[in-house]
Length: 290
Image 1 (cartoon, rainbow, N blue to C red):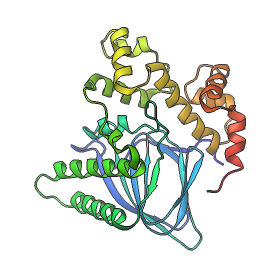
Image 2: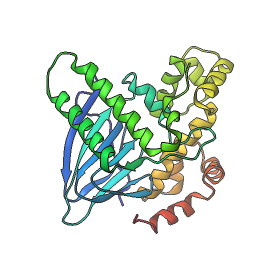
Image 3: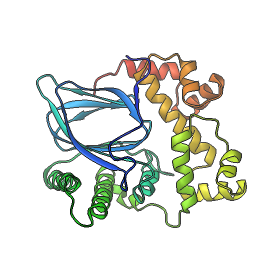
Image 4: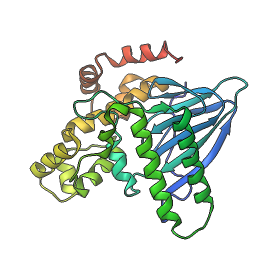
């Protein structure tokens, strides 16, 4: 276990007209625990292995789709003698309209069960996703007219297809909530990027030049969460990854995740996760295999 997973904040073309990059990556061992400031959508095209996202393992095989959100801590282990090969699409939270989709791709929706970070595709669904990622890859490497527009539309299609596949009984949830103000989308991105800092409803309202009451109402209507609830869940999500993937002392985990004190962190962790931080770590240390 490493003390701090590697944190990646840059990617090719991140400052270009379209902050998007796709590549084909291969490894016969895997990729060590890391997190990053951007979104990543991947598709396995060869080999077998397993991936852990914030403490939870899932198997990987051709057809496995995974979405990793900013600050998720994940690692990949290839099966011995089975080199993994996968497409990796990475893009920034500020990529519009993909940024709007990113705000809707949280693990939890109001009044619904958590949705998984991955899905296994087979048959026609696998062939469809293979063709879509190949098309994205070829278009990215080309220089045809309307290249950025096609890449943007294909990325949105890939994200929507992924979300439909991972929750087929509630596919309409991927449509999102109409009327979400642009300000709220910007605030969601702001929280996702700065949750480890001292954020309050007052400070964010001042940053975005709007009243607290209006911001609170807008945020609840648009996301289904209160501002404080969304902030706490974002911090706890990151803390779970640190507990499962590092040897950091639980007090340091609390501070690293943005909590002002361990007492507050422990209380919220117990309330939201149904157990204490150390118990969560022990559980995920003893279930290191899918």
